[in-house]
Image 1 (cartoon, one colour):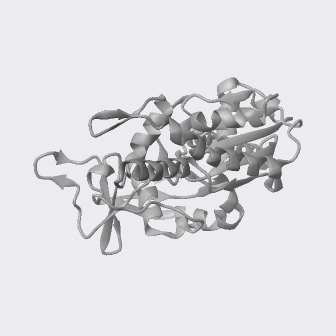
Image 2: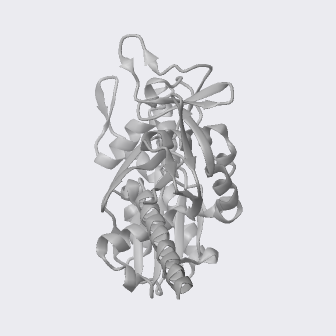
Length: 342
């Protein structure tokens, strides 16, 4: 039986398929941060082993995984820019995801890219993903074949599967909006086919909002404030931060930060043209909740179709698409064998 797996290396979070058992697809994730080290430093003297893996990259290592924050230096960079798939950090994150899958051979690995870079980078990503990978702790994983897709396409597959409307969607136009950490992506499709001229992405993700609020907090308190994760949680829970042991409201900074959402949605509307033709508008991504209000204002006559576990919607769709492709190919092979016997 062919083994299919999927990875979605995002600017903020790396998502992957950990295990498949029939219709049960188990996902995993960790921050898209890789700590450079000269040796395997995943053991701690008092706390035991961190839930990370030191991925060998030439003579050095990059530590990645769920507990990566325990290994990070106070000042660190994150993935960004269209050339991010060419960085050693990107490869380390992909190999880290392969490590946590606990398989030795993958027949088909499905990987995703932001829409803006998809056409130019898909072949390079497929080449990067295929082959044998040293994933850490002496283990290797062989990827026989890879398939690259535009990230939001995975969400459409997930939606169709969850709602049981795959046949129906094949004859409809859909808009999939993926609100990520650093990018705001949208995909227009006819059936499952990508309409590339009506699909794109802009660098206007949740991280842009968080940095604006962090900058304003720093000005307000007279000290540098860099806790973006705390701001993110405060926005999602609609509650104040805690600074110096006291509640600190960020309400006054929200209007300035939300200009990011207006800019992102405006860019999408100017590129997709008329919206009446869309039968489905699917909202996904880790930042969907934060941007939802502004997307709804821009598309007041559409119902926004939201997915369970939006963080994993793309990678789950990648997995389903990969499984579907392998099954279809197996069916064609079976037909060919029958024809040969006649």
